[in-house]
Amino acid sequence: MVVEKNNKVEDYKFKKGNLNFAVVGHVEWINFLKVDQLPKPGVISHSEKSLEYPAGGGSIIAKILSDLTLNQIHFFTSLGNDDYGDKCFKILSNMGIKLHVAWRDKPTRRGFSLIDSQGERAITVIGERLAPTHKDNLEWNILKKMDGIFITASDSEIFKMARSASILCTTPRVGLNTINNSNVLLDGLIGSNLDPGEVFSFSELSLKPKYTIKTEGEKGGIIFPGGRYKALKNKKLKVDSYGCGDSFAAGILYGMASKWDIDKSLNLAKVMGRDASEFFGPYANNNKNNWINSYMSNLNNKNKNILVENLIVFFLFTVFLVFKSLKTLSRIFTYGILKKEILTTKSNLGVDIKIKIK
Image (cartoon, rainbow, N blue to C red):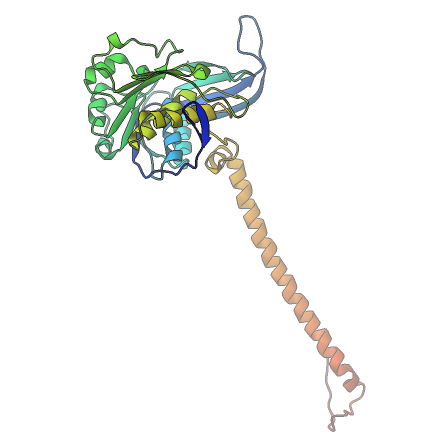
């Protein structure tokens, strides 16, 4: 892994921590489309590659944290009672994330993320963003045992419960009214200074967070207190900016929960955000992860079962053939040894014998 220290990039070996994290937030079923150009009025764009996954800020942060720590991540979310909700639950569970779901009789939110050749994106979402609340009968007492919690969508009562964690971070997209009504002191408020839905001024906050970070993509960002910081340069070609901010936020939470100073936490966040731009889709190695392929391709599972069955049949048939061959060879061998002795009923063995070979 790479970090920036005193404006110099250094390599170091990252070791997974033994921390407990929870995420409270939303999930969306997203179609990712790699297009030749982002939509323009009257212009038809073409997609050369596509993926479908559960995504959204909550699931991205949960997955990044699960990659950083040895312990299972608890993800409190809400899903619709439909096929998309079912697929989201199964795929995220197969990632190793422990889901606590408030099921709704509403459709799971869907969306389309279009990415151009420069890695820039445009997103369109369909439906209401579902979020868990304190009224949902979930295992909220688990929040008391957490080293770090990140909230992307919920209500003010959940913020009060989550404040029992060592570190509590959130995004302005959760709603400034929700944050203010909770009247809790945040360790980190992290949002994009380029996204109108996340831009805010300190005068709108009733309590000033310990650290506030406003990200600005490749330009870096601003941290309060601290000032402007630079972004890390990409090691590979920028492919997709989806999830970069969420990955950055997960890095901040992990560092602060690990009791690192803010500079070291910021360095990790830069790495996570930068690396997220170097692959297509919401998660690294989308095409290699067994937990994705095992669910998204039921046909592969069926083919594997057929292959195993065929191998068993082939093995049994081979054993049968070997047994028959050995039996035949044994008879031939026996016949060959005795043939010279059975040319006549007079045997060289000194006695008369009569052997009938079938």
